[in-house]
Length: 462
Ligand code: 4AD
Ligand code: MG
Image 1 (cartoon, rainbow, N blue to C red):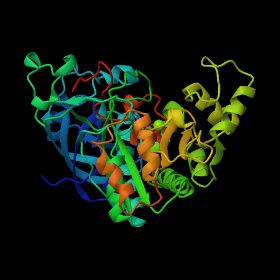
Image 2: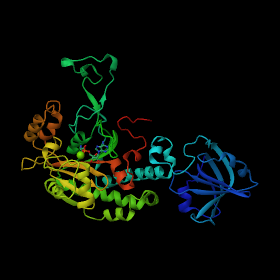
Image 3: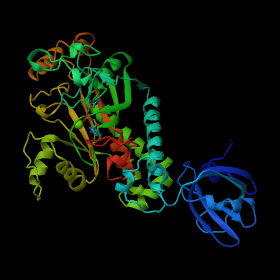
């Protein structure tokens, strides 16, 4: 079935051109002499208005062209007399593929809440909002690759099933083929994973970093872009149990290089969104008023602020507000603190560096002060942490001592220590939560609205 996409016709159609379009009916208006059927085919934010004259065979099909029906229209492209659109289609023939019963079709009316649409995630891609968000998600993913590929970073595919806990936070989903009704206990009553498929405890990855590191130690600059899983019990607007993460890793690089890369990367993505997703952004800006395209364009050209964790804590302690979680050197910054830094103090994205080692992962390079590590988080207004990264500990003795101190399985992670044993070098990387990026750029308030099938505690509907 040859069809033209509405996006194509709107950008390069010519008057009088014979066309065939397929799409879903957004609305239908009938009068005695003619009718309008408005179609969207997912190719762009815009719709195409089809004019159907009374007395034609197409007019006889109108009863089946309910809101939501999938149809094909053959006709002629002509300049529209009406306001709001340049082109319209004079319909000559209509074929109805699938009707949508107005009595039961959930998207019969406009103006549903995002909460309502979340319960019908399988139908929401047909709405203006989710069309915009998912087209933008696709464009941003493309630009992630574009950014790294142009700089000579290699895309590497790290495992989804793994036996190491990169972040050491223990927030992992177990992967097993055991019959849970017959699980055998091992010594001490714990589950005996030596009976399991992999003969040890396996889980879904919380980060591709550790494997990314060994790829960088041969290929130089790499990045991962894949699904990531966290079994943390966080029911918030910025946490998912399954999300996509982008993790670049650079050999021969310091924290300074890492921060420069993170800043260039985000700016590249902001600029790309403004350039390539304008109709989507214009729709979202008008509809929700959480983003301003001009702000995004300006951000793509403004230097990010930098502050050390120690200075950030000092600023927060001086703040004339009462935080729910009191601020003390050594605490993990809560979202209220992050938001105060971005929204009130720095009024934009800020890179916080040199966190206390106690609240960060084992692999981060220890600073000479013995208390902090060469870590950096990029905090963004509205979202808080959007990127987390660090220079990695490249000294074998220091890393091993830290792992023992944190009771990590040093023997099992001999492969990771090998990277420090043989040809160790300064290296650094970071992780960008892809949904947090999409959330930030689109202005969507809830991270569950920027991924087709959100997973969160108690939520797995598709
Ligand atoms: O700060 P995180 O935990 O860092 C890492 O995983 C490192 N291994 C990254 C690295 O250095 N290669 O996670 C990185 C980012 C966060 O800044 C956040 O944007 C996102 O991943 N993220 C989540 N996004 C959605 N839902 C969750 N539950 C997330 N947890 C982290
Ligand atoms: Mg983090």
